[in-house]
Image (cartoon, rainbow, N blue to C red; front, side, top):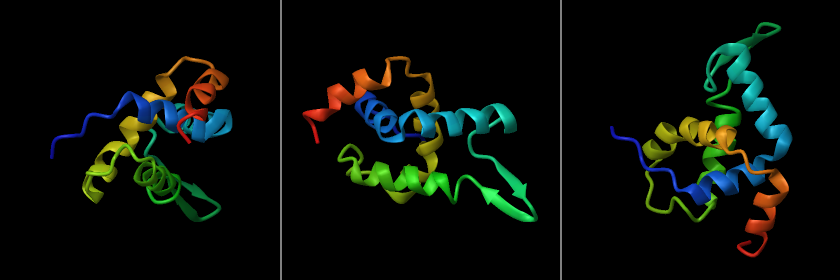
Length: 104
């Protein structure tokens, strides 16, 4: 299934929502496990990012107002790309937040 184009506004909004701590989490997952959509063992209990943090990202996408015509498959197929775009976005967080203040 072809991936959806991720609107730049969604990257900005997601970056502001995640904050520095959220972006740091996904950056550390990518560096430590080689991919954002990783799964690792925590004392015998699996930590599947797709079902935990990924679900939070997908729910945020659903409520963003920027993905209204997307299907559940679209959210599943595109949330990792959204996070990649968010991690690559280099404008300081406070600048992005200032941009979004008037939109919320």
